[in-house]
Image (cartoon, rainbow over all chains, first blue to last red; front, side, top):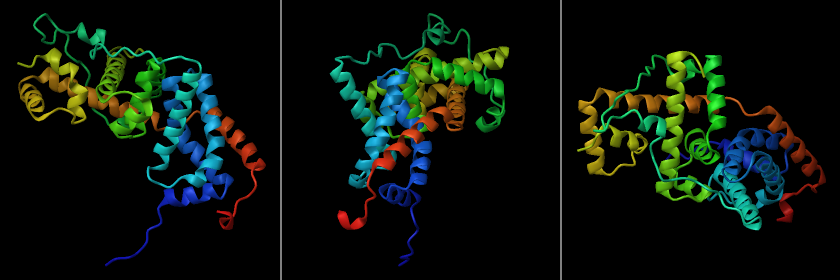
Length: 206
Length: 86
């Protein structure tokens, strides 16, 4: 039997964090804070969300000693942020208002005729990979603009699921939404990105 | 019968493999016959990949710097731990 031990980079990062190693914190802050902010932005405005993320890192300095590794570090951090945001919302008696009623974006829904066939079919054609396309600064700026303009709830769902690659179940727990509502958030966000890229490719305008 | 509009409404569920057997099969049948819907599914996938490639590239440096500063201050005030205290 092969008993060779391969050091897990995340385990060694966690050990370094437990020792209070400042360079390990720098590394972890850079790696995990964007996702933590995406979680917080689901619940709160930007400045409150950033404050929560900063507070959570300070909490982590003490709490990391209790981290037992039952979930990954990323999921653990995201749960800390989500719980703190929920407490803040509870104490201010506010709720996150989300519209789950329609899965099709109105702009896309208008592109079908009365029989449900495409009236204005998709015109987008991708000839290059996503990484090559992202070398186009204008397209990258346009994506920035449209991602910022997404409703926070949709953007957070999209970021956690796609960019931070959480499982649906984890996203539902972190954002406190049902599986079917998560599907609506993801689909609405993806349609908006599709419509933006299509307009950009067609007209060169954002 | 599944219409293009219906398919557009569940396209993400199809892409993520979240549809049940029968529903999944009806989407596959529709896609075999409809080039516009094939194009839509392909575009939705590609747009999502683009978003992923974009958002994984650059964190907001100012935001990171502010957290680094706060963490560095907090670390200074903590007593160093050693394994024997646990």
